[in-house]
Amino acid sequence: MKRNLITKTPVAGLSKVVGCPTSSTGDIMAPDSDEDDWTKYADTGYESNYDPWADLVSTNEEVDDFEEDIDEFVDDDIGPREIPRCPTPDGIEHAIKIGTCDYCLGRVSGVRIGGDPLEEVGARVRKEASERDSDIKPNDDVDCCPFCEDLFMELDLIAERIISAVEGVEFQKVQIGIHFAKDHVAAEEVLRTTVAATGSRPLKASLSDAVQNAVSKRLPGISWVKEGPEVMILFDTLTLGVNADIRALFLYGRYRKLERGIPQTRWPCRACRGRDGGCESCKGTGQQYPDSVQSLVCEPLVSALGASSDSFHGMGREDIDVRCLGSGRPFVAELKSPVRRNPDFDDLVKQINELAEGKIEIDRLRFSNKPEVARIKETKAEKSYTIRFSSDHDLSSEEIEKRINNLSGQTLEQQTPQRVAHRRADKVRKRKVIEIEEIIVDGKEIQFDVRCESGTYVKELVHSDEGRTTPSVAGLLEADCEVLWLDVKDIHAD
Image (cartoon, rainbow, N blue to C red):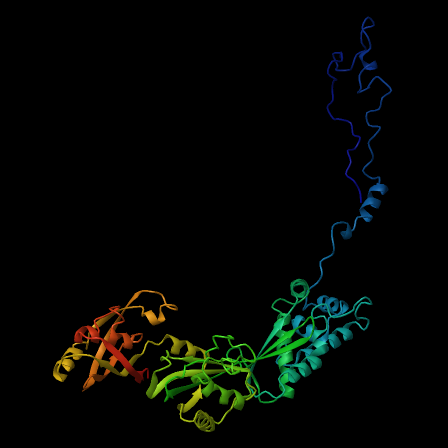
């Protein structure tokens, strides 16, 4: 490399030097003898021995030292050379050298997959790279695939553990969830954005597909879903641990409670609070009442389906001393972790009714789901009741019927009853009486049917709860009333 230097060239037309005497022809004259010779002090030195051009170099001369400095200046002095990305040949070569496995090479190389398994695509890419350069191989310090950390090499083991976790369980719809360590996810993302071809599929999705394919080969007939699975497979990539979450089975039906004294759901013993083994008070059952609608319905279902436990969801509930007749009260039985999911509903209904021995009965069952549980809980269905009470009145039957009929269409104001004040907020609720019919007066005992809004306290409608419900039958008859019994006649839900 040559430097462009100033050349030593006479300056054309130079006729004088400023401050020097000249002759009439323009020649520089010698200074007067009486004055000091200024050239002795001048650094231009025309009259001195100083050469002002002594430090200049000819343009034809080479500067070897400068060229040596340039030769030693390489890219490494600036920063690391940019790593090529797939799908370029250099990028694929780099991916192979860092130890990328065939599965990951198939997904990051950027070549067309066309529905082929990732490992076949990766093997094909590796073979083509080897044909271009037979010396391409992973670096000596490679321990595992930098993308998946050899998870794809463990597919057979993972599939075996999943199959073992669901052994003996009936299911068709299954969903898989994979948990990665955060540092693994971050490291793989960096690699994909620097080495992999643009648009390459993430590791999690690719591994999920590979695991699903491996399991499907061993369990034909199952379907992999995103919503509503019967079994949820949870796989941890750090420990290779597998957990199978068997989702609950929901069954819908209607029950009729034919005997009084049976609560809707299990009621733990007040003395021992339902602890294991119970106490003398509950005779070792752990329950305040020996039977409940929940136990009579769900225990046969738990046994038949191999469930671990149950929950009972009803559309409201009746008091313990109230029967539920008519078409029955809608409910959903939730069977948790059942190993069998395809029951014979007719056989189950028969078993439940036989074991209940006339205490309760159901007439049908069908499959349900969690959203229907919410619907049942939120539905505010009108209900019809039959109630019988006694009253020390002095009125004729006609007058009694007339006064009770006056409640039809009335809106009640009901302050929270004293019997439930310990578990409900004390406030005034407004409920409408839709219709009253079938009034029967039998001396001091009176009976009638009433249809009203959901949430109406029907007993308080009769005896008024010391004036906390207005209007009331007791107020209209101007006499005390005592409820003898109450039945749910029908629930108008469907």
